[in-house]
Image 1 (cartoon, rainbow, N blue to C red):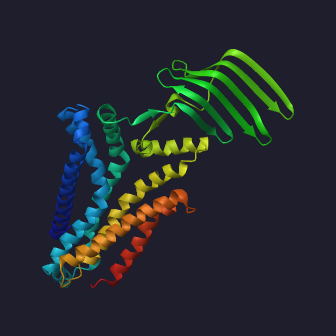
Image 2: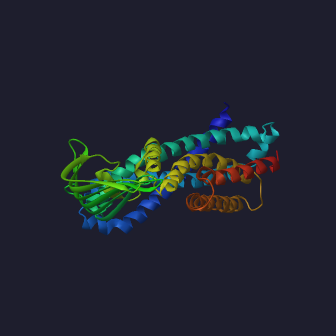
Image 3: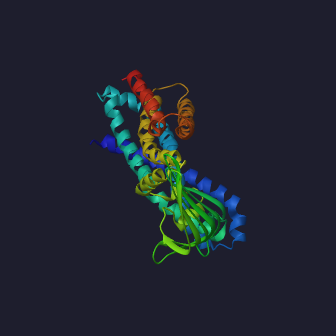
Length: 358
C-alpha cells in the first residue's frame, strides 16, 4: 500500500471521528438540558450520570449517525482534494478512479465493522445498563402486565391469566386451551397458578381439566397439580424496546421461540435482525457515492457537493425508514425490504462510477 493510501485513510478517518465527536457533544448538551430536571428529581449522582448514563448513551448515537457522517466526511475531504486539483493530478499521474477508491473503501470497511460490532454486541449491553439507570433514577422501563394477560404459546395453543402478581409470581383465574383440526381438544382452568422456581414448574390450584375426543368429554378436577407450559414469569414482564437489549445470537434465538409460539411480532423482530446486517453495508455504498460526487470539480466548490451529499444521505435514511415499515406491514419479504435501500444505492453507485471522468 502506498503512502498516498495511508494519507487518504488517515485524513478520512480523522475527519469522520472529528465530525461524529462534534455531533455527539451537541447531542449530549441537548440531552442534558432535557433531562437535568429528571436527574435532580431522581437524585442521581453525577458520577453515575456520566458513567452509567452518558458512557452507555454514546455508542447508540455513534452508530446511528455513522452512515451520515461517513458520507459528510467523504464529501468534505474529497471536495478539498478536488478543489486543490489533487485528484486531477492523481488521475493524470496514471492512477485510475478504481484505484483511487481503494483507500476510501478500506476506511469505509473499518467504519462498517465498527458499526456492526456496535449494533450487534456493544449496544445491547450498554442499553441494558442505560435501562437500569433509567429504572433507578428516571422512569420505569420494566412493567408487569398485571391484568388480562393473553398468550399464544404455540400454533393453536393459548393461555390466559386474568391477574398477575409479579411480586409473588402468582396468577389468578387461569385457563389453557389447545385446538386441533376438529376444534377444542384440551382445556385446563384453575383458580390460581403459581411458579415454583426450585423445580421450574407451575402449580395449579383448584383446577379442572377437560379432554375432548369427538363428542366425548372427560373431566378431571383436583386441588393441586404440577405441570409445565411454554410460559414463564418473564413473559408477564413488558420491557420497553426489548429487542434492543439482545445481541445478534440472542435475537435470532428469540425469533425462533416467537415463531414456535405463533407470535404476531415476528416480522418486527426479523426487521431488526436484518437491519443490523444491512446498516453497516450502507457505509461502504455511501462512501463510494460520496467520492464520485465530490471528485467532480465544480465552480460552486464544496458547498454544492455538501448540498448534494446531504440530499442523497437524507433520502437514503428516509428510504430505510420507509422500507422498514413495509417489511413489517407490507407484503414484501422482510429480508428483501431491508436490503432495498442498499440495492438501489449500489445501482446508483455503479452508475456514478461509470459516468465519473477518469
